[in-house]
Image 1 (tube, one colour):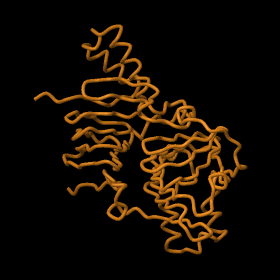
Image 2 (image 1 turned 30 degrees about the horizontal axis):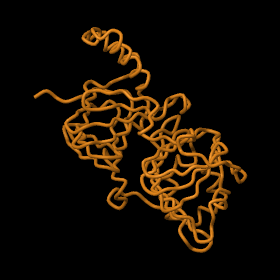
Image 3 (image 1 turned 30 degrees about the vertical axis):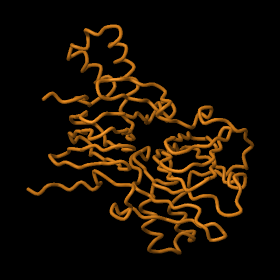
Image 4 (image 1 turned 90 degrees about the vertical axis):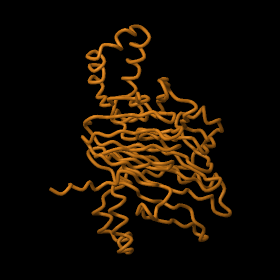
Amino acid sequence: MENIPIGIPYVIDLDDHEASGIPTMIRYHANGEREEEMSPVMDGEGAHGLYNVTDTVMCKMPTGVTPEMASRMAHLHEFGYETFFVDSGSMYLYTDGKRTIVKTGDIVHLQAGQMHSMASLEDVKWRGFFHDLDSFADGWQSTAVTQRIPEAADDPAYQKARGKRDFVLCEQPVFRDVPPEEMGAVRNPARPLAAYAFSGFTAKVLIPRWENAGVTECVMAEAEAGVTFRWGYHRCREQYYVRKGRVKLRVFGEDYVAKQGCLINVPKLAPYSLTVLEHTEIYDMGGQTKWFAYLQDYESVRTYDPDRLKDGEAMQALKDKYGIELAFAGREET
């Protein structure tokens, strides 16, 4: 019997668009300079359009354009949620009546109804993860059509078929300058909401579930070489982003290496493991596991009733309570 192919690549290198088959759409300013290079990586799926990913370069403001002029593209999404990794460069971010500079290492999380605009001080690598946002939910499909039929983009029949985009243009914002730590939309692994230390790794909560319509959360594991995370059968598709370091993914008996800048996808129900090859920051972007609630309860048990950690049934009940399918985390015994 032949193996059934899985359509989504297990590892996608966002730093090599050509090898990964990622298309790029370029938007130009009136003077001919590039304003944006937007690459749809993965369409959303399901009721919330989860796993939707783009990889964008927000180009430096064109000649003659000031940050104030750039901020006139302020907009909001009525239903959509956006999480952006600032992986190179720096830009002004406007939101909540404030302006700050975000730079390499920051994460920007924007909620439904939150007005925002940006002004790039240099080229910025701006990697986005979305849910409930139909502006990008059909990125692959619409790009495939408009690249082959360019005139479709201006065809009313095409626009009608594609549907209304969740995009509301706003007025130029009034703002005051603040440091990034005073802007709620700006996150950074150096300033997690909460952190939990284990042998060989630390789990850091960056975006809690209540800031994501209860649909997802974002938790990062900062792990040292030799640490392994192993899952059994799991109830949903898994998606991770390797921001630093390298890990080895083992799934269906085969190994794949995901380095810095790689996206990892694991099919629903497929047992798998991640082994850390060097100091790594890896983010759970599937976000459906209730890590934060589990980590808080686990910390309570570890603090107030440490003997209970030895009770396998009790700890499995705690995992079941929050949908934790992680079977092992730490250094394998030799």
